[in-house]
Amino acid sequence: GIPPATTFFGEPAPSIDPASWRLRVAGRGGDPSIDLDLPALRELGEVEARAVLDCTSGWAIETPWRGVPLARLVELVSGPTVDPRRAAVVVRSVTGWAASVAAYELDRAVLAWSVAGGPLPAANGAPLRLVLPGHRGLDWVKWVATVEVG
Image (cartoon, rainbow, N blue to C red; front, side, top):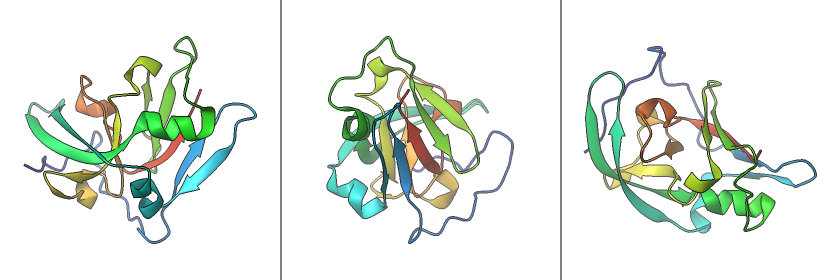
């Protein structure tokens, strides 16, 4: 099913225009940065990840999420190998909320545009939400705006 709509501080879902929204993927140092809209992200390939969203407010739900692997985005700006000793990849929301994803977790992390077989609702993080299996819901960043490779 679709998870309940919750936020850490109780703030409302931000107003995001899907037509003008872009994801910024920033490389490290001299690496390039790119901006991608949702159709461009879909062209990178889609995976399904069944994962448990464990909310700090006391509920958990296992459901399927569809999106692009975070590792694929990192490869676009940094190549196929990320040194696991380097700083983590930071995924940041339009609200400023952020989570760090360690290099060894990149293959299982997904930036999702779909949940439970349908489009991701705005209250659940549309247009893009981080799905980070094994982490509490606090780290599943909603309304993703940037991916910063450390």
